[in-house]
Image (cartoon, rainbow, N blue to C red):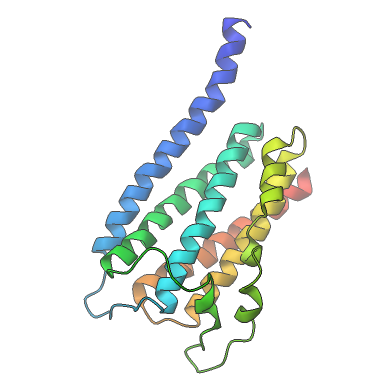
Length: 217
């Protein structure tokens, strides 16, 4: 392989490494943010609260989005998709750190003894019983999470990986929006609801953009 060809192969890998390092730095910043941006008037959530459950489950949800974004940045030739993937990885990396910081500040364990998404079957603030959350508790593909097979297809696809990524991430974001909206129906904690509101706005906007990208492929 010529020096020029070898340089072309190394360049995208270096860019992926840089993106991951940036996400790590934002993760550390998010931990600090989660520890120090906390209104004194806000009561500390319990380990079975909607706030704690949301912080735990959304970290897991975000981590898969970061993984998908890192994969496509290495595979895609589309500058638009690579930029989108970078934005998703860095912003959600920061949010993972922020939610990790909340649980640390609240002196709660990062993992729960309850099944994932249990908090979603709690009644809403107006006392309305939840009938949707219980259906998700035994469903391991809940809330837009990609299956193992779908992740393997994204990793191994030679052609069409851009479309696979967009389809998976649209579903993933849709699930994330549903989770954030469920939190907003169950919490008055200003720190947590503020982040959930930003997630809804950002991910809905990215869903629209990804649908446009998908239609152009």
